[in-house]
Length: 212
Ligand SMILES: [Zn+2]
Figure 1: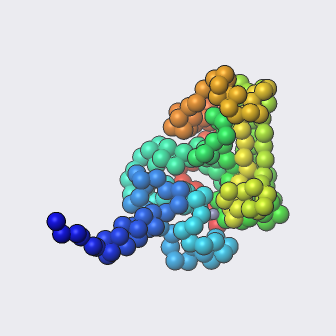
Figure 2: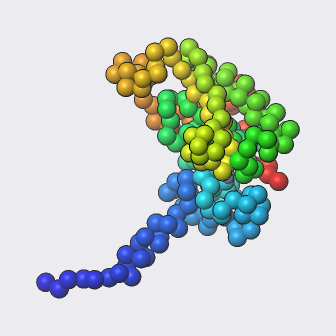
């Protein structure tokens, strides 16, 4: 049997993999990626490298192409959009209900936020406290910012605040899992629950982002 040696195919496959943008799910892959001037627009971000910038742009693109807003925003687990900040689920949650509060602007420090962005981030945090409290009835919550790679930020270049519900005795995650204190819940389900709370009780949900 003749052995096939097709390095071009390997390059093609790995190239295709690399062309998929960070954080953008399969269903939104039609998004062509950030425009060439995205680096300048995003204060020096590497185009295509930022999960947060990508998910907003990919969802907006899909909506502009006719995808239902609910479907596009569910795909990236975008819960709510404010004028300067948005709320999404952490794709790798420490616990059910782990959300991220993110300014649209690609800035890496708290000090770089404009006053209105900082104010909205805290306003969203207040809403998260109420919404996550209503849905998950936690005994406490953590709100936290990890600045820079050394500060523990997974996506250091784009500021984001973590918010997650806590229960007494949950510090050891295995203990939590063993006691099924917090039932594992799929991200789509968490998204639907929080989305419903915002629709009923919180800010109106916007259908497109306001950046600039
Ligand atoms: Zn970004």
